[in-house]
Length: 236
Image (tube, rainbow, N blue to C red; front, top):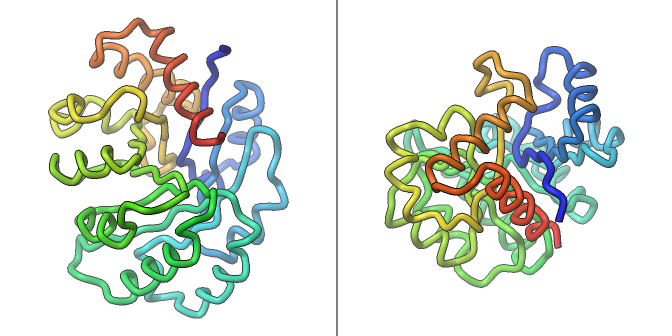
């Protein structure tokens, strides 16, 4: 089957030149999940969905406490969104009760729905896994994973996917964990503009593919085909 470029975590609304970013996505045929950080931003952006750009309904964990009034907007929009993100937990500054309450309620509402979630889990992967449990129908993607091996193994066993970007692919942390990530659970992300290092959108994805090919000792074209098939699988 045909290989292609895709990005499961891209902040299109935060790119300085959004029109230029859209043109690159279109010109390079990059199937892009454009995450949002607040529900009202999703409402604004979703009208521009296209063949290559699909907006995700998000509520970034670090913004939950500051924007609790948007929870009801989130719940009203849930039935209209196939893609959910960026959501999750961030306990890098300590436990956040509002985040935990919101994420638990979100998972309860969509536990048996066929949605695709891109999940933030900084310093909170154990809590993310506990809240989601092992009986769910959506497709969870751990975005820019930074947790431990034990939790990673649990996530993979439960059917999670791991999205990888050009900034993390050569880090000691990621390289040390590749033996715990089956190649059929890998997905691409960029997290642009937060991972900006001068590479274009398409070049960042291509760089990640090349490095994954090297690390997994798989031919570059075969790796891209595998990744494309993985993305097809989460969409099916």
